Length: 108
Ligand code: FES
Image (cartoon, rainbow, N blue to C red; front, side, top):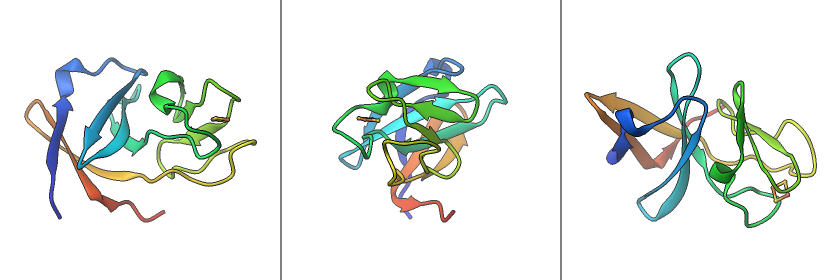
């Protein structure tokens, strides 16, 4: 397990996704309304679209291109056209640092 600093917690806006790269992987980081930080793969599985350009709705991140909403907890799309999940990464908070392990996905 190798946690790397992705960004500062203080720079995250609630219910807004931030695109980061950790270990060469594009990752969307989201601070939800309950104060929980999520990290999921940033590339929509339906097309080469950055999910962090989309919209946070509750516990989902919706792709702006065709509307598939990916669960921030499981990475699974809740509606078509995407049907493959994106990875969900392990996140830890240390002080003001958001740490992500790009090699460790959460089993769902
Ligand atoms: S590119 Fe994301 S739903 Fe089509």
